[in-house]
Figure (tube, rainbow, N blue to C red):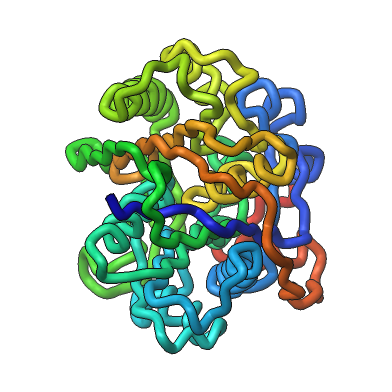
Length: 361
């Protein structure tokens, strides 16, 4: 049966770093408090748009697959903090790449977006509609982060990750998946004023920032990710002992640890890089996959579980069997332009819009 194989992978993390110690200078928090509750030590702040991060990650993934932009016939961009609603961020990424042979669309399932994208891209290839799918998760979350809110500003960062999907007749690729949404509680994580709801008028800064009900979100994330992943494994005809690596959405180490315990998977089989980047929403899993490959954590034939939970409230799990190749076929020389501002200078626009953090007032 025709399936889809990940043949290329890549990431793009902006160079500006915001550490926990930097945040100590902004709000009433400490490195110890952030680390013990989230596992995050630092995150990246982008000096370019989400579409530019996406383009660099996409070019790196294409080089790893031995493909060019002319080969791409479908461009999927998973994001909840893209450049604009119209045109879509995928349209802008297409322009950056000059991928004129590709259909292009955005996919917004928040932090679950990459898992949704793997399922959509795979089924487009299975159905014969497409042959080379470039799937990118990209976020510029600092744009919607209120740095006076210590409950949220410690969590989020910017970045992009990408994969290339191509047809295969081998018994590899997506074995099973489960996607879900519970819109009845979508209000517990979101940005209230980022669309057309309500009447036109002055924008309340607080309604333009990420807000969340942390304890309730934590409870739902743990139960939903763990249960969804377990069901996907069962649907694949596998047992949890058959799973070689779990790559979860990087939201919080306590959520990741609790999900692993719920699955009965030892921490040695769970990939974690949240300490370096924080929560980059739809980008976390493709970035983590890229780093897992770079670190030799993926072997030919491995059974991998991707699982995520995010705004909506969305969730998604996928069981994926890796192919033979774990080394890139090539490398891209694509790079971001160097930043022209320091991290704090980049955040000045947030301070001007949302107000100065208490340490700066």
